[in-house]
Length: 256
Image (cartoon, rainbow, N blue to C red; front, side, top):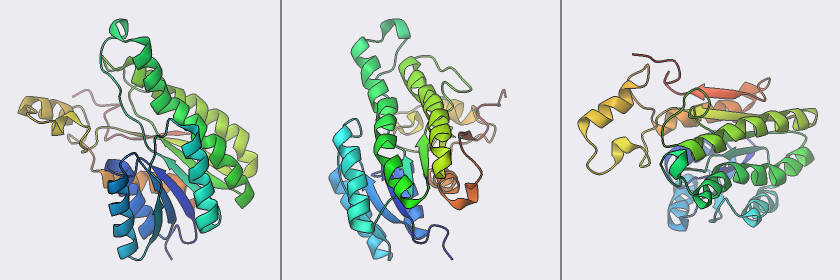
């Protein structure tokens, strides 16, 4: 039996990278999906691919910084599929790089809105729907940056993602009595378009440096992080809550 058979899930940031890989994996394991991202055409292509493989999915494009999107995502899951069991709040990203002393207040606030406030808004609407189902699992994509390493130029991003750790812990304590587990997933470098190794003109020494930061001497494929999200979202992690789980290829411990 597929491990998400009969489950209903929301996946944010599903148009590419980790989110797209997770949506396909969750659907392949039997979940009915509501997927979101800003690029509607990519979401529609994802839904077509999932449905062509026998899965169930629907797309709702929007900006995760907006409260109304999170409300509509949950409403769609309930109205289309009957409820909500799993939420993989994966969307996020960097707004601007640079030293803290040169970071504008607008960029700081925009980064927190994208990576932290969006998580608060997601949980605000997801949790009541899961309570109504008798339990569930909420997973947030965080990062090792601000958890086990300070990376120059990423102060706002690190602060926002580190803030998710506190949010996850409080949510886990608040929602545990309702049989809802809440965890953060912390990837290392991932082979996506947002990784500098894939930037146009990336130098071999830059690519080698980034890969070499990891104990495994490579970055992850999105599908590898998706499998970690599947673990946290499923009953395989039935006694895991309030955690910040590293799936970072050893970047947190590597000194070679």
